[in-house]
Length: 266
Image (cartoon, rainbow, N blue to C red; front, side, top):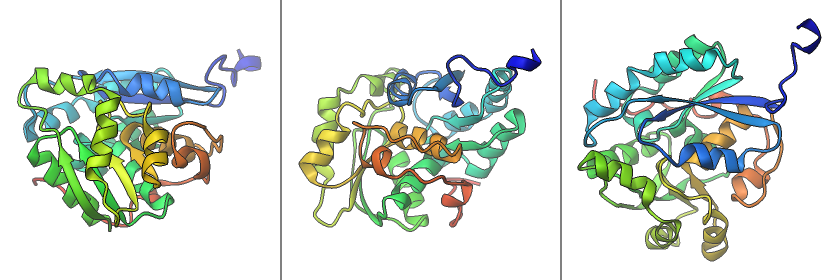
């Protein structure tokens, strides 16, 4: 065993642990499609039930310790919480601590990854598109503003009144996401941010960038990017936007820690 202690047949660059809402069917396959050779994805889930409410996010977060403990046994190199709205509504420092305490590795949450991605692209003004209900949309705007970004326009698809609608986010076609990006774009917006890890985006990122002439950041694209850069992996990845092709410098948690996160409630 000593001779092969560093050997991993597939995750020889890195093994990423990913904690997902139980209804999420998009994040994992998008991570796998974008991941460079030598990087593997290992998933655990936290139960998400019912309509979108503050309590539903906090109940989901309470299961992160168990999910991270499971991923620790897979010897992952980093752990990520794949829920944008959940990492905005619930206190970010607590989520990070829950994961890193269990895995003894670096940790990232999707909302923090988006902040780091926008900063790496030099963006200050952003157009926001989401599948969320209004209370989540407003929390997201406040979150982005707290980190120094101006939201130039926002449109939410209002999905989440029932659990079936929440699952339906994963069925929104990429063509609709393309039209959503055009709907929210404004001349003053320096980038488009398409929020939600259960929203399929990677098929249209490059096409939106070509059409609108500005970078696109999406939740899954940004979260995988942050994991790779926090691990010091500089591999450029073609086809999924300027972020993965050009922003290759390593980052640390200080990349998104300059401002306090907004908490929806105490």
